[in-house]
Image (cartoon, rainbow, N blue to C red; front, side, top):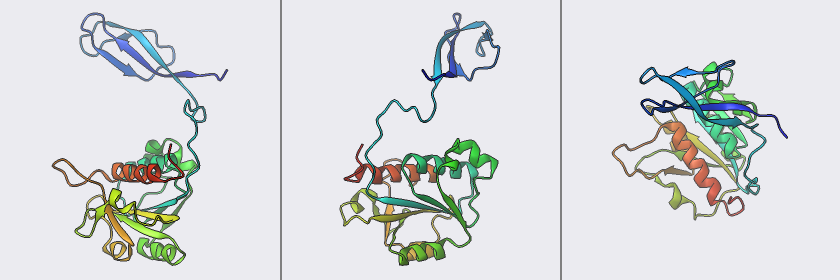
Length: 221
């Protein structure tokens, strides 16, 4: 049997009822309730399994080749989250355009949690130039951005599906570079039912990647 360690310890206070979780500390035997100061007790522990020991069966291999251009993303945490999402969605490569931080950045690694070691990546100084080169090589380019030209991502799916797709996301404030919007084969957006018109860039990328993957006729889980 694979040896496991505790990933998290759930504590409960018998006095005020406060229940919380904390990472285990070597030699830890007791803890004071942060809410009322009484002695808390352990009520559950979550074992830490290796990433390779997933309890779920592996999904079928996807038919769509996916790559992502993170163009001028300013937040290293967003880049790390993008690496985590790209790994889960089976992205073949991440292109880091302009000022986008590289995986050598401490905050990227902190959020990626090791995914940056498994997803191929390349830093490119000019995102539009790189996207144009991929487009010339047969890749379809979709930009994820809410513009008047955009269509809902779900509406774009019934069109003849490309075999190789580059999905572009842009700067958290300025959005996707206008040059990338101009060369994109399609501009797609996620529906928004609330007050805000957009999601955090890493969250939007994750949602879009999984919409694409789960709509893949040969890659449905």
